[in-house]
Image (cartoon, rainbow, N blue to C red; front, side, top):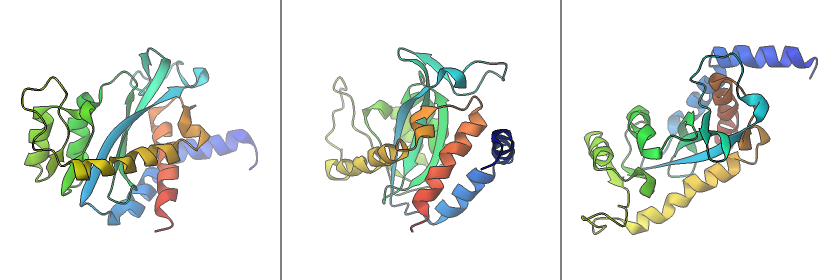
Length: 197
């Protein structure tokens, strides 16, 4: 590969110019929007990947397990990535979801787990002309009579996507200090998943 610093500078330049993210967006433009599966997964941040003199919002949060980052991912009906966002590991799914879902293209159904149980979020999804398939928590007075459990069972597609992503060492543990570099690193395997299509 050559001198490590040359490789790093080139990657850092690509991340700054969002080249890898643009490649991912180009490859994922023909997505199947019948179903959109939304979920989040936490990855540990390596001790060398956190701290330093960079600006504050680098999507590294303090949580029980130490320094962590949460990947918010949306997958299509084939389990391929549509879009993603990074937040600190302590950020709850339902807090990051409204802004993330607003960025997504309009799909037929938006399927998520109980971590996204919020009437405000359901209303936002309906305003986008999509149908929310999100189970309510057990303490809900409304209940789950309106849930499409058959469709909800396919939520494993986004879980499988996270499992495939975490085969990559640089995704399973975050080594990048900068959020933009971490997003570029995440865009790389997401682009690979679209190539066989």
